[in-house]
Length: 497
Image 1 (tube, rainbow, N blue to C red):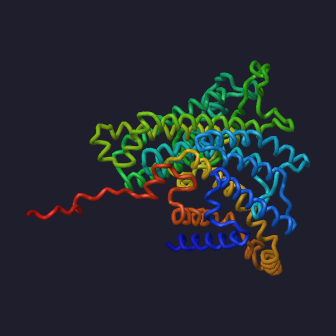
Image 2 (image 1 turned 30 degrees about the vertical axis):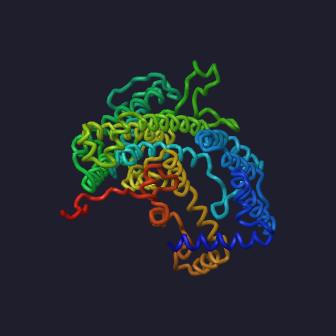
Image 3 (image 1 turned 90 degrees about the vertical axis):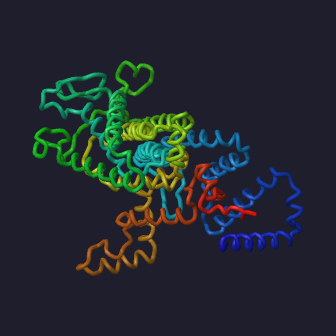
């Protein structure tokens, strides 16, 4: 109520100002709908640009172009914007490595965001694509089927280790010597070396089987009990990754704390390189096409496949069964939906895409290490789903991109901006003058407070936008309009005459 009152007072104040220039509210409402939608953003943009000029911050050309594109999308009819907006974002994402390469060569192509400074680097963009894949996979389990999973890192780890088993010299000591389509493998190197594109599929199948194996004994549970059991599986996987070597297991499955490395790089080989495809990603060192940009474009393609499959499954008969279970499990069972089989399909589908993301991450990092699969990763991915909007694929991708950027660069940039200011510099200089104190004490170190900051973000989202940044239509209606079903016990019968 307080927010509505504030909005009403602000609106009344604006109309009083406009009334002074003979533009009253009745006259404005008589204007065509297109004019009413088109004029306010232009006025706001001009005011912001003017204020920027006055304080010495002229608008960046790239920023003006992005604002113009956003304005055109805003004016499009809703049924057209529904498709135009994702396509526009995809085109901008594909062109981002080109803009970044020109920025690195000294050309002023990219603008800086206040407080956060520079836009994400290409390494961060690759990690954003990988975490977006995992978030979309977890959204199948949490957003579609309504199953609270706190052990999703188990699928991520299983996919990464599956990628390492089939694309590294790991099995050399056991006499393994097999190669099929792999690139960048020196002659005589033992182990199993399969093309990374086939390894992605192998890792996905193994992880999906792991999802079924984990899901069968646990999906009979609901609510908090399911969350606790999945949390336990996530912890078990981390312990296995750290101790499943000769010392702990008697058989070198994960190589323990040192991990498994190196992992074969992706590539299309000499045959497909004749049609323009890169033979080996590691050997690409051009200005626009290099190792990191190729990983980013390939990760973007994998993300698109994940999104396509997720949307198709959501609209299928199986997807409708997931949503029915999420809304009311008892009613879904009464309508003939097999609960265990449907839940197991959700677990297997989410695990499938988590395995692809894990294998691609292992290939990008050129190694797999147990410290990459701690429990907080599961919470981190779940926060992405909640922040973006459970059940909405586009919202989940937005939440994943935002939190990954904050984790990789954003918080460090904020800390740097703070410490460069007079108040931050004063604290740091005062501490540095005392040799008995650590250099970082007294200065803002945002990465150390990262999970507290993520928690604050989630609290604010739950208070002011409980459906997420881009909520699903069904959840949005439930939150805004509520459900009007009256409990049976509260029904009052008319008195008998």
